[in-house]
Length: 277
Image (cartoon, rainbow, N blue to C red; front, side, top):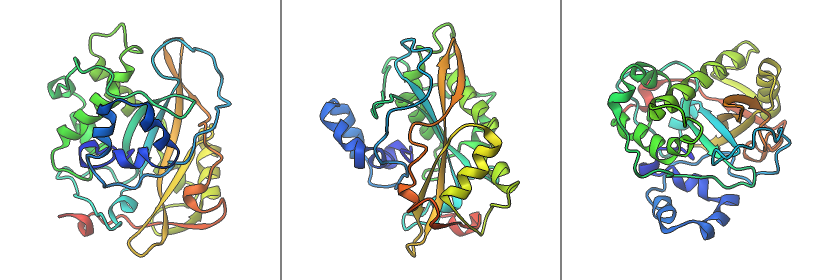
């Protein structure tokens, strides 16, 4: 999110810390969205730095780069907030949180096209994959969650999909494709890092970047007992000549949410039955 369960409270997580400053620059719509919920603590909220990523393709798509955010369900569900496990069993691994257009100065566009309503019918061929890799962990109404992702984030990518008549479909298909190219669970497992492991921010980054080839962001949260745990991994992309290319993430060097580069963090076991309501 943000936990981008927008209507259930993901917005708060993206508005605290460095991003709070942006509230003075946003319209009333953003403020209203920010108070919709007080739910999810989201990592990587600290101030973003200038990016060392290539400045090519500064075409005016309305954003500078994209954040693909994946989270570990065990760490999301074992907090005081808890979760609501989806009826359709998702993949055993990291789940998509969202694909977010952002600017290198630390701000981001949102709700870019009120005239582009969400159409679930347009995603009929992707629905199985959305349930598998991109479910809501807060609401049984999956379509409402995907609608939020489209209206808040996806509409801000419409200029990139300018030649397409199926921009909504393209947004969700691209997100699923990018996830396929960065299977965080498989990458970590291949290095012996998995459920019930004790690891560190540094070890997670080394395992992911050694396979992936680009710098990623890693974020943590706390379980009910106050133990620090791995929550999110983020990869970054930039539009270049009509394509999306991987880049080093702007804030890849910060371990703030995980304590320090070498501080111990855990990856809790994945036990969906414990979290179902």
